[in-house]
Image: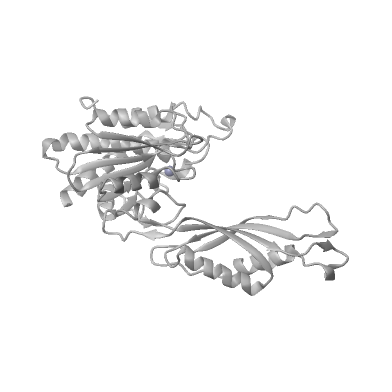
Length: 385
Ligand SMILES: [Zn+2]
């Protein structure tokens, strides 16, 4: 494999043909490992989780020197949904017009293939003169629970004393055109399950009851009308959205004893989840009545100030596409939330417009340009460190 150049579209197609719907692997990481081994990478296959659900991960490194630049990505994909809704086989990797088609084309098997091809090209040019390290951290558990994926691999690396000096995450961060956006942070996400408790009764005798539905409405009103903040230098304002309200009361003449709602807060760097817990308690206590609130935090907000690896990425993007990327913190969470605790991280990849949708596809020209951007970035990164 090291004799023949890795062709990014061909490698992406091989990966797409593995239906690695999270958390299943279906041999996707084996393909990556096999190609990387051929390029002189030392590959560690890491399987975490119990018998019920095993998650496959891969850490591959070429070189033993510093700095160690890591590319992080995931080979798992979200389900295709109804295959009838697609105009091609979601796992067929068909070539149509000038696009490679299939689930994972942009999120993010395409970017993995582009980085491997870029690394091969760069390592080939540097030859024996290369004294740093290039590594890849690939997981099969990003789109799912993210419990047995990147987080566990990072712990495993730390236990081995293996240091990542910087990390590039290949998520599809480009918004409209390749290179228009880099992510240098992400908002945090907190989900609250709120149950208002009351006393059941007859709707004709409300004085003998305590209507949980009314209490819940008042609590949600208190939450949805309060402003969290006006945004910060690199972040949009934090938001709270109610996603469901459930009472499940089939009787129109019964006052319900309990009522439930779920809400999700996307919060910026003005908040931590601990601060939000206090903010929520204050508002809910202000309404009064008995309630329970179950909180799940899937990630704190974080920001890597531009200037660490963002500048080199922006320079590489400018050279290849002529575009000046926006440094953004929008969108959902990604594994960068775990990596940022270990080393500076930035995210850059393909145009995300079709990710998680039917007819996911990547333009071959974008795949080639992304490979060239990653290749240019490798040169800038190792020249500067
Ligand atoms: Zn992704």
